[in-house]
Image 1: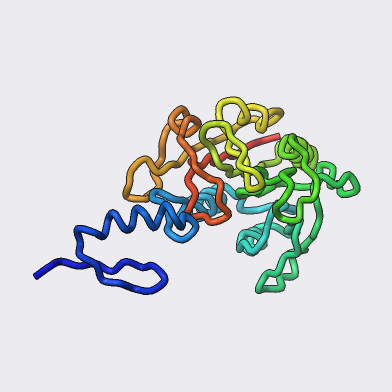
Image 2 (image 1 turned 45 degrees about the vertical axis):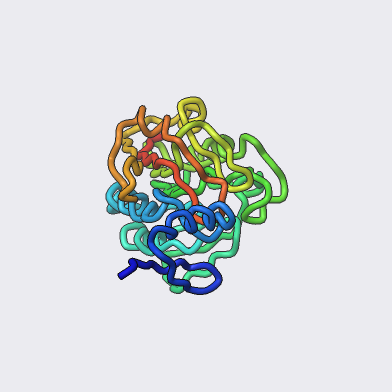
Length: 246
């Protein structure tokens, strides 16, 4: 019996197995927006959120979740802090209403917003890489160093000895307009300037099993990236996770 396999084009078609791979290759080339690449970013938030939750101070007064979006991190923070500011450039549509969470729609590059030495801690999960890149998240103006400006502001908003939990894409230094920056050996030190690194770890997908592994810093910062799509399963980069102190 001839072995067959389903090819998903505009409809499901059974073709001889010997033709499956060539057809799949052609389809991927013709429609790269449809088929995911392997490895991809699947599971990146699992890595980032678990890191953040582990290192969040388990008691405090005021905390900022920068770039909240639809994340559940503000709700986690509300279990430990008296006041949680959930800030995002876009409107936040969370599925809860918690008395200790205040949602703030604001652009950190706007000089009118300021919280000098206000926060005991800041969570900054996969957000800073977008700041200042025009064309996404309602960013109309391009500010090449928007990420560096924002990191300095966040440092100024921390109380003395305040903790800043940061996760970012890492790999060879690249900017994938309008989506995100990738931080490598050149840009990463600029991003972390003025902070003391308390803890750092790096994750990547070095194999075709599409699983995240802890890797060393040198490997992560030289990781070959491909991240020019708005779809996570079409992109790949490594992850840098940091606990920073003012």
